[in-house]
Amino acid sequence: MDDATTISTAVKIAFAAVNFLVWTGLFLYLVRLHRKLRRLESSAGRGTEESP
Amino acid sequence: MSVKTLLPWLLWLWIALVIVAAYVLAPPMAGFVGGGESSRILFFHVPMAWSSLVAFLAGGIWSALYLWRRNPRHDLAAAAAVEIGLVFCVLATVSGAIWARVEWGAFWNWDPRQLSITVALVYYAAYVALRSQVADAEVRGRIAGAYAVLGLVVAPFLFIWAPRLAAFSLHPQPVINEEMEVGMDPQIFAVLMAGALGFTVLFFWLHNLATRLAVLEERSDAGA
Image (tube, rainbow over all chains, first blue to last red; front, side, top):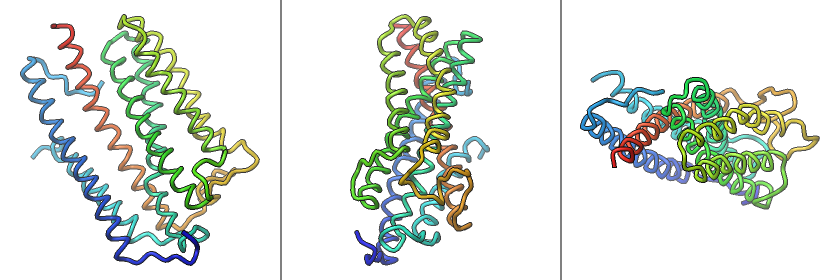
């Protein structure tokens, strides 16, 4: 890439969209993991959700 | 809906807005290739490096707590913090190397900051290796704890002071300089700070999940 290269707004939006999808995918995975942990903790009998 | 349930969704929204701001709202920074567009790496690379420092410091603090209280949960929390910190550190190093290829022409340039982050990676990779080699949980906690507490001095030195002690750095001066002053567009700075805050909160959420998982695994192993 040299200084003469310009990136159009459409390309920037495309980059932002890819970033957004990756972040949303990671986020949904973490939410699912959080729910699964809560279930396991309650079935284990004692909550361990509190941060140390 | 409770605040605790709402918080992750607020984080999702916050980082989504940072992504939009980073690509669309923030102006390109003068002096960077591609008409300044390559500077947009800043909004992800710097928050990742920052979060890895936060994670390593958090690991040191939880280790100190373990050495003081001998609560196994603190040791697991320290290990989780360092492991997540390593992931952020690898991402910061790789994203920095890709940017360096675009901006400086090579992935590796012996820049002081490239060197210091690599030393930090090796230091904390050694922490993980050290933990894996000690079977007894109590001994492991004590040795790894002392190592991570030493990291409370090593990590700030490598991330903050060491790159600034060097006479020359390829890293952009508006971001990093000897005076430790920020010389960038206020709009760019605002997006950068928003990104750093988002990544820091993301670290604490990931840490909460990782620690809970480690506690459940340990219980499961003890019960087996």
